[in-house]
Image 1 (cartoon, rainbow, N blue to C red):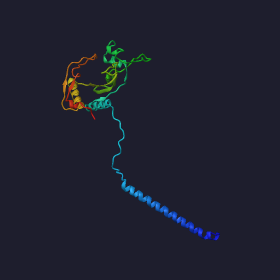
Image 2 (cartoon, rainbow, N blue to C red):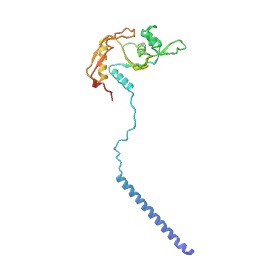
Image 3 (cartoon, one colour):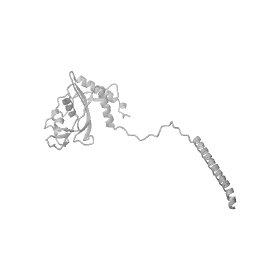
Image 4 (cartoon, one colour):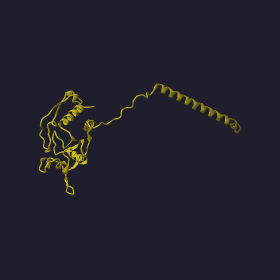
Length: 233
C-alpha cells in the first residue's frame, strides 16, 4: 500500500482487529460462564452435612474416677481438702500418733527427702491423712471434707505401684456415730456402682496405724451383679 492508502485503510483495519478480539473475548467469557453453570448444576455441595470429625482426646480413667467420687461426696455435703505431695514428717506421722519406731517410718517403706537446712524432715506422703491434720488445724468443727490425691510408698511389684491414689473422708461434729459412717459408705457405693441395693459385709480389719479407730465398717466388701462391673463410657 502506498502511504496515502495506509492512512485511509490503517484505522479501518485496526478497528476490525479490535472488533474481532472483542468478539472472541466475549464468546470466551460466555463459554466459561456456561461451563461454570453446568458444573454448579452437577456438582452440588450439601452444606447441611456435618464436618469430618477431628481427633479428640479423653479424660484419663483415674481423673474420671476422682471426679465421680468428688461429685458423689459433694452431694452428701463434703468439701474437698488438698495438701502437698511432699509433706512434713511431723504431719505425715507424728501428728497422726505414729511413733518414731513404727515400721511405716523406716526407709524401706517410705520415700524420704533430703533434710532441710532448718533440720525439718520431709517425705513423699504415704497417705492423704496429713490433709485431715491440716484441715483440723485450719478450721474449727463442724468439719466435713474428703482428701483425694496421690500417695507414695516404697512398694513395687506385680500388684503394687510406688505411686497410687487415695480418697479419705473426715467428719468432725457433735452427735456423729458409726451409723453415719455406715450410711455414708452405703450411699457412696450405690451412687458409684450405679445400683439401687447393695450388700455390705463388715468385719474387723488389721491396720498398721495406731490411730484410735474402729475398722469394722471400713473393711466393707460390696457385692453386686456382674453386669454392673463394666467400663463407663
